[in-house]
Image 1 (spheres, helix red, strand yellow):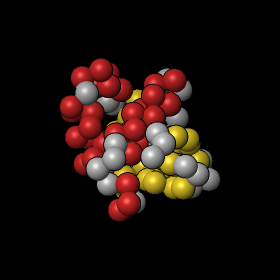
Image 2 (cartoon, one colour; image 1 turned 90 degrees about the vertical axis):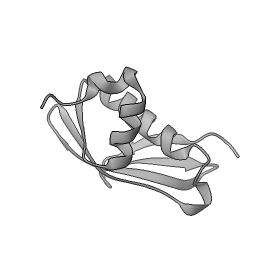
Image 3 (cartoon, one colour; image 1 turned 60 degrees about the vertical axis):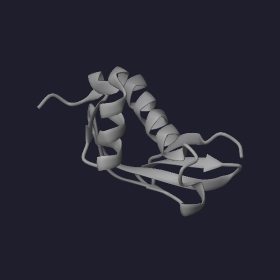
Image 4 (cartoon, one colour; image 1 turned 30 degrees about the horizontal axis):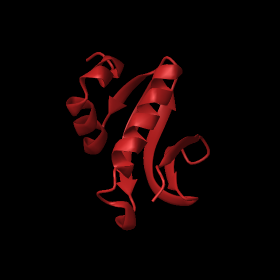
Length: 95
């Protein structure tokens, strides 16, 4: 299995992870100036446990960082991932 490729799809308001051309997962968001609110993450059953979810979150957060945006992880998967990766906590929106 190839590595997941992550790309923003503004029309769907989601980052999509594809593996070998097939959609493997998505991270839905609501974007406003300077902020991305992650609302839901889903990985297709066939890709559970393959690292697609982690690749998806990492790709989405790297894109937010490149855009100079903060993140609000309302999705528990994204919040948990950030909690386990210290080097991404700087992206969290101040309370």
